[in-house]
Image 1 (spheres, rainbow, N blue to C red):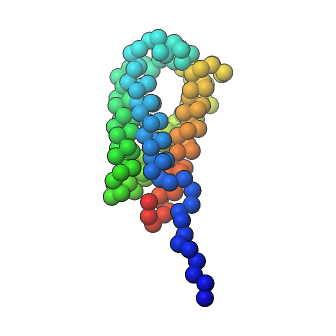
Image 2 (spheres, helix red, strand yellow; image 1 turned 60 degrees about the vertical axis):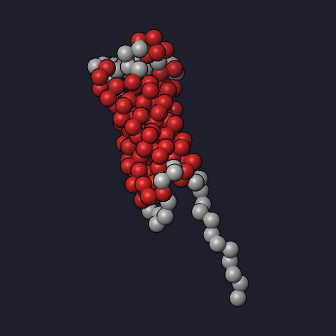
Image 3 (cartoon, helix red, strand yellow; image 1 turned 30 degrees about the horizontal axis):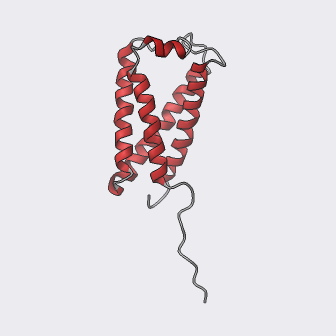
Length: 142
């Protein structure tokens, strides 16, 4: 009779995924909180959130999400629930950005501009992190 070694969890450890997501959420939150800073948004191809208050409220929500994600890396009891919520937020945000980018809205940055690249990269990063976090829905342990 052979004894097999204990199985290691496969994939990227959830602590790393949550840390990366916390940093991404913090960066997105700070950019949205800076909605009144006109020179920043001029570099993003003249995309300006109007009215600013909605962008700033969204930025505050992303900063709060970043804090919860950061804390969940150290608190195993809250990790599963926070990770599930973050997966939902990331995937829904990815869908919203994707739909917006493929629409004919006037506020979309021109293709190839810094603003367009920023939205594209943000959408892809949120999708990847969201899928990595969505593994929690099917796992017994985190």
